[in-house]
Structures are given as C-alpha cells and as structure tokens.
Image (cartoon, rainbow, N blue to C red):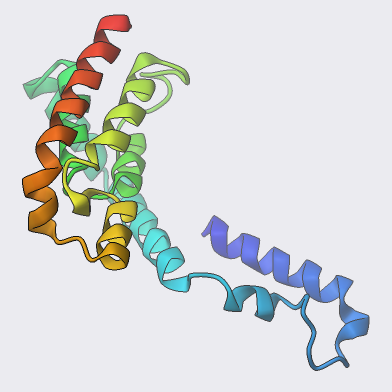
Length: 173
C-alpha cells in the first residue's frame, strides 16, 4: 500500500511541476513515461506477496507459527537455519517479510544476532536451488539454465557454502 501511495504522490508532484509542459505531446518528464519503463509484473508480484504476508499476520497465523516453532524446536539458530533452507524453495523477500511478522522487535531488538543471521540464511539459502531467488529465476530465463543442470552442478556446492557460512557465523557470534 505504501508503494501505491508513493506512486500517487510522485504523480501529483510530477504533474504539478510540469503543468506548463502539458501542451507538449512528447512530455518526457511525465509520470506516464516513467511508468512505461517500470517492470510492472515484478512490482505487482512483490506487492501481492507483501499483501498476502500482511493478511497472514492480521489473521495471527504467523504468530501461531512462531509460537509453534518456539515450543517444538526451541533453538533460534536451528529455526533460522531451517528458514534459510526453506528459502531455497521460496523467494527470500516474502520469507523475510513473513518472519518479520512472526517475531517482533521487543523479542529481538534491531541489530540482534537473530536478524543478522536471518539475513545471511535467507539471502544465501536461496542459492541452493535456482528457483530460490528472483535472480536465479531471471538467470534461468536469460542464460537458458535448466533447473536440473543447476541441481546437478551447483546445488551441492551452494548447500555446502551455506552450511559452512552458517556454522562460521554462529561460531563468530
């Protein structure tokens, strides 16, 4: 919703500043020309994901999931490592947005090891499978990389790198 508000404000400011140029048919500074260069499917994808995560948070499903994980797993490092492995399947942006809805800043203040470790795990865990990140999916399309080629040639190295980095991050904390 914030993105749409920002686009609306940008539109009003742009039209106000360039009001005298409206007679010019080829107005290069119009909000319309800027929006033509925007990758709308990506923006709508992320906006939809964030709205879906917000609805899960409003329904208290994320809080219930956090409570369940804390009761049955109990160790934050194991939970976050699992989230990192889970990001190999799901993109890290909606996953981190969901985690932010599960755990609040009273429980884990800003700068806490939990958030730093989450950033590492969600960011690098998406590389285990090529479908785990938007960049991987884009690489599939641009470079004609198949899922199975990546799984056979890259995934094991990415998994070992992820686990090694996770171990080292925990060790250095």
